[in-house]
Amino acid sequence: MPYAANTLIAHVDKDNPDPEIMALAGEVLHEGGLVAFPTETVYGLGANALSESAVAKIFEAKGRPATDPVIVHIYEMDDLEKIAVNIPEIAYTLAEKFWAGALTLILQKSDAIPLNVTAGGETVAVRMPSHPVAQALLRKSNLPIAAPSANLFSRPSPTGAAHVLHDLEGKVDVILDAGATSIGVESTIVDLTGETPVVLRPGGVSIEDLREFIPDLAYKARYLAENMTAPSPGTLVKHYSPDAQVMLFQGDERAVLAAMHRMTEQFFAEEKRVGILAMNGDALEFADMPVHVALMGRTDTDMAARLFAGLRALDEDGVDVILVRAPEQSGMGLAIWDRLLRAAEGHIISVTADETAS
Ligand code: TXA
Ligand code: MG
Image 1 (cartoon, rainbow, N blue to C red):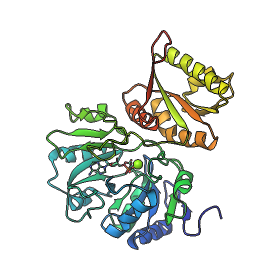
Image 2 (image 1 turned 90 degrees about the horizontal axis):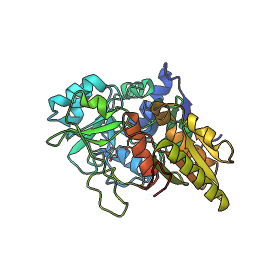
Image 3 (image 1 turned 120 degrees about the vertical axis):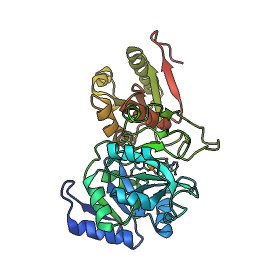
Image 4 (image 1 turned 90 degrees about the vertical axis):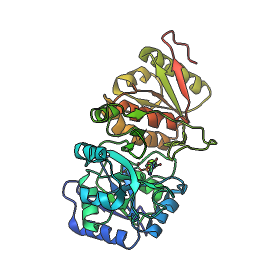
């Protein structure tokens, strides 16, 4: 068998999950085990959110620092009031509009949630996923499920079961495999516990869409070097990193492609293997070179869905560097840009129209 004896991979039909498999997975959660499951964003590594010892296994399996809290997934609105207290009106407005879906709300936690879920803090992240398999697991288990992305800490998030297996083989009891996730980047996180709502992480729901309901919604990207103290969890720059060095190019499209072309030639001269994350239209620019290309499709939506798989695939190809042209920082592009900047460990190569790279 291709997996460790203690990791069971169960294939489930996305639109019609087998009730017996879901019941088995629910039992594993009740027994304090870990179940990896698909959501519409990325795969999650789930544990019973009401059990401190079960949640502790998440941190152990991922190698995740205890200072980084995890999201609690719920099945229906009634569950929200078991997880959170003093819920503001805007939370209900956003829930009505964007749940089930790729939006996570930070609220005041209830006593039901153990402190390791929230990294010792008084706030809890809550999300109602729309993926039918995630919903079936929540319903069958009748538990709130604590789940971070099912990758090793600081690795690209998993958008397929093979990614979960690669990172967590033997560390997770069951992987529910329902194929690739559709959105491909994680949920948008909005903190509703401060004076005004703040986006902590751009993601599957665009800030533009959220601003229809919160016109003054704030977002200030905070990217810290690793040796600095994080003001809030999850703001470390080094994240989503493949083994290869990621080089993020930004600026005028023609100039960026020319700069990437030159950089590639330079790497070839150093006998390095080069990978490119390329939009379909950009890939032709590199057709004359022996580069490894991961095609990102035609739109930001395509790119979001393919981004993490592309980073992992280029790693598998054994490339030394991965070059990528940054998208516009709007709509889904902002979430992609955020992940790429972290994968590039905070470094941006700005190119101006006269083709001088800085
Ligand atoms: O789409 C998603 O959100 C996926 C799927 C599985 O639901 N989950 C996910 O979880 O991306 P994770 O753990 O990889 O990222 C959750 C982020 C972390 O950066 C964490 O620091 C932040 O949410 N977070 C969790 N609880 C928080 C809290 N109480 N306050 C501030 N940030 C919090
Ligand atoms: Mg994660």
